Length: 346
Ligand code: NAP
Ligand code: G4F
Image (cartoon, rainbow, N blue to C red; front, side):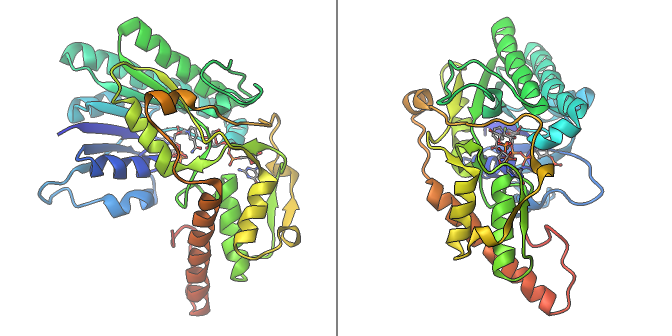
């Protein structure tokens, strides 16, 4: 049985990837952070009591800021494939916590690569490694962006992801490790974190529809993003590790929309007029913005045979339908005297 180790398994992509790999018959090991509240909502559906027979999903406490712990997890789990998804992944937050972002995103990757380098050497095992790179690394470079486009990072997050990318390239060249860098453009889903633009908007649409709020405050409406569906993107991660040789790939739909267009589409799905409910709050603006991302994934389409299946319109509809239903339940509980904690209904 193939086995995979996922850092960031409790995040959006970790949850979709774990589901994909379990479906393919893998044993899946996930690294989770100790937290004073439960942080496993997204994978609860996949989780079974480890005392049961034949359990294939196991969770291990760890943190990409703790190299010793990462080494111990490698020794315990003996993975064939590692997916390094763990990160402080919010661009705006990275301006407020640049040092921590660098520690988790750039140094976190370096710590894991160092552990893998030593593990491969002493075990003789050829572990395959996926590094979660980002289109934010292109930042200020003009679209369309592909594997040849020079990086121009515009946030502490993007600078850290760029460092992680180059660490990965260096470890591939220096030590002959199988390391693939995915350069993924924005990908979303009903499991997207609630403070990213798409989910913030679709959550607001659901709550507006059910009379639970009246306004939503946003920042820059003119930025363009190439938004795809997370379920499609984790397939690309897996495909990268099934190739005969490691390489780097841009994963994108090739279609971009402004934030304003996303907002219009999402409100439209619920029959609402966004102009009546959206207000601008400068606190959501970034000191340096990435104005326009639109990916050219020709290489992935040719070499991996990867194509995105979910269109922009279907993605917006999927997220709005999910969040309108979520808000309906929240309203029902409120009307029946329950106090509903944010996230409890996810
Ligand atoms: P996400 O939902 O924010 O999930 C991030 C995951 O990393 C969570 O499981 C989080 O744990 C974990 N994490 C955070 N800090 C950690 C630390 N110090 N040690 C160990 N784990 C830590 O992000 P995502 O959207 O799934 O993205 C997955 C990866 O792809 C990230 O590296 C992100 O930067 C990158 N990426 C995302 C996109 C996108 O559009 N989604 C595009 C390009 C690249 P908690 O649950 O405990 O917080
Ligand atoms: O949803 P966002 O916060 O995503 P962003 O900054 O593009 O980053 C995401 O995608 C990257 C891949 O390109 C990942 F690497 C990264 O981890 C993350 O998943 O913002 C999208 C756009 C930005 O231009 C932002 O300025 O929406 C704009 N925006 C406008 N109002 C807002 C808001 N973004 C957020 N989060 N909240 C707002 O109120």
